[in-house]
Image (cartoon, rainbow, N blue to C red; front, side, top):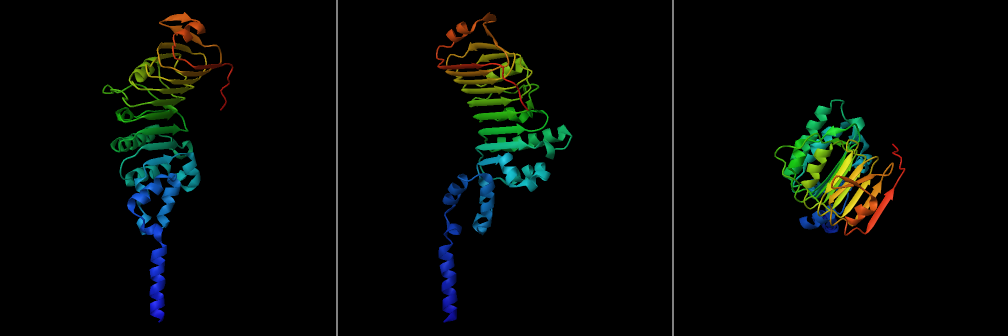
Amino acid sequence: MSCNMEGKRHCDARNMDGISNLPMNAMEFILELLPLQDAIRTRIFSRNWRFNWVSHQQLLLNNEFFDSFPCLKENFLSFVHKILLVHRGPMQKFALSILADSVPRNKWSVRKDVEQWLLVLLKNGIRELILNNLGSPLKVPPSLFSCAKLMQLRLGRFRIHKLPPAFSGFPNLILLELYEALLDKRIFETFISSCPVLEILSLTFCMKLNHYYLSAPNLKYLHIFDINKYLSFTNTPNLTTASLKVGCEPKYTEQGNTSNLVKVLDSLPRIENFSLSQNILKVR
């Protein structure tokens, strides 16, 4: 009698534990709805869930993630290596906050690590990449320019010294955001012209750029937060929204000649929203 009752309890427990017996496609659907930190925690559900998180298509190793696992900050570089090593399958989005306090002083070592991570992302067909460097500027690894499937790219505090000779552009890039990036006018012009379908461009405190030369035929949205710059709208026929926040009145040029704002607006046939804010102070 007792044996029958015990067997019934085990049977009922198996029937009630439906989350452990979900089909694989259902598990994957649930995991994709969760932030990475919560997806990792699902490994405690059962043996069936233990390694499912490694196929998560959005790896967001940002400040929010490391705040959830503060113990990982001390071994930041090692952790990123391990999580990319165990990941399986395609990756749609990768976001990384490079923690200044967790990085050794040797910048070459850090650049080497970032280079290896980008090679893994390249292999997994990365579509959206966010690299937010919280320390002093780092040189962009050459492998970044091989990520031809990128559709969105956000870089914070990186230096683009030169473009690789084999760089053929980002044919699928729709959105580009640069924050405190270091690159000169020539690199910037080549970079932008190599993004034929670029629609959204945001530039914030790109100090080495004294002249924004914009030739982007598909550009629709432009945001510039900077100071004392020249602006050239050479080939932006589809620009509909422009927001310029500058420290003093910018100088607009058209085909190399100084032009007033009215003339510039006339050269933007589809402009719908144009805002200019002055006397903005940079606050750290």
